[in-house]
Image (cartoon, rainbow, N blue to C red):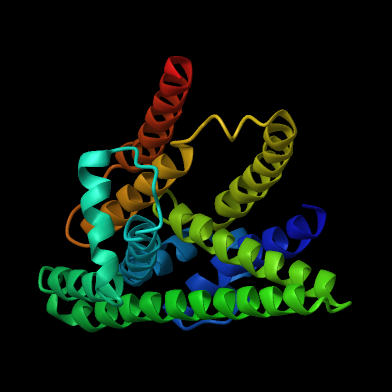
Length: 269
């Protein structure tokens, strides 16, 4: 928890938003930092130009995160059973989530202005590539950690530490990309994600010690439905103006509903 704050929060949550904007407008990160702090009007103009790239990248990446979770046939607990049970059938199709994401990028690219189509396609494909790389890195550390555990290697602790840091940074990427669905202000994103990360980690430790999470069985489902909702909101932002209140309410609705369902089913057991 301690090193996760230093590495994933200050590394991924602080610097990644700046890198995303920097790449989308082809400017140095230092230039973006100075622009965001001292020239917010000019920074906003650049962001407006890069909004298609940010939305396409973010929507694609978040869509893959959500579909990866719902297509997992090893998931035996279902919140919205009528839908989630059917989604697990896609696990029989290799890379089904990647195919769906690519089709989504292609489909939405037809509804954007002609000169923006290439930007949307390239940014969306970049989101797919980042997701594949993330999954590959996590898989590498996961298998390496398991082999060391089986062999009883003395450096198992270091491998486990690195594995957890990769996981932490990878899941931090979800929150950073999701934050761009709510606002494109780098100071707001950095402050919000930093406070949120510290609060969530403190709350997680509290819940683990009290064994609260074991009784909230649908909370993870609600989080991934929220991620799917954010993805669809960012896709919709490519072709129309989506009010921030709508985008922000999506995540809150699913998380609160999942919490209520978890408490309700816990009371009936």
